Structure formats: structure tokens, C-alpha cells
Length: 127
Image (cartoon, rainbow, N blue to C red):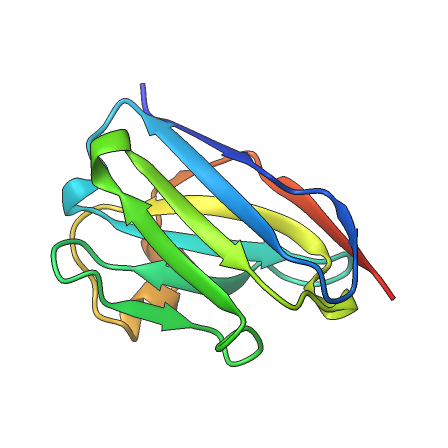
């Protein structure tokens, strides 16, 4: 069975850094697009960052570009989200997800393409 388990979320002050990890099992992620999404209270789930297989093209939401970096370790079937200079608006439940096969940078923003999801890890940023 395919499973995704996120970790690394915690309560931090504005300006801090966190690294989230998404450990996967039941599939090899080397040929899959991986994405991070987040959902704040009263908001819909939104795209944060994505990374394609092979060339590892990346895409980011405008609100996190320059502060967050997505990366992958195919040998360990794990994807990461490095988050720097965190802001209160980054507070959300962060989800890891898999879209089977390659996608374009544009299409990887579409949450409808993702077929496997983790349970989420909570990030809370205080001002």
C-alpha cells in the first residue's frame, strides 16, 4: 500500500526555519511528481511547492518563492520542504502528495492531479 508520512512541523517564532520531510512507502518516487500543499483554518488547500522527476523542475506559490525550497532524495523515497524566514501567514497544516508521472511546472499546481496524500503536519508561526 502507498503511504506518505510527513514530519517536522512545530510551533516557532517568526523568522525561524523548519525542514519538513515526507517519507513514502509502497512506491518508488523517482518517476513521480511530488508536491507540498497547505491548508489554513477557514481556507482551501493550496499549492505550496512541487518538483518533477528526472530534471527536477520546481514550482512555487508566489507567497513562498525565495523562502522555501523543495527537494527530493529518490534513493530514500523522501521529499523535503526547507522553509526559511517563516511568517505568521505560513501557519497551516502541510500535506505531502504524489502525482503519478511527470507534470509541467504549471500543471503541478493543480491538486486534482495528486492521487496519494499524507496526513499532514502542523506548522504554527507566532508573531
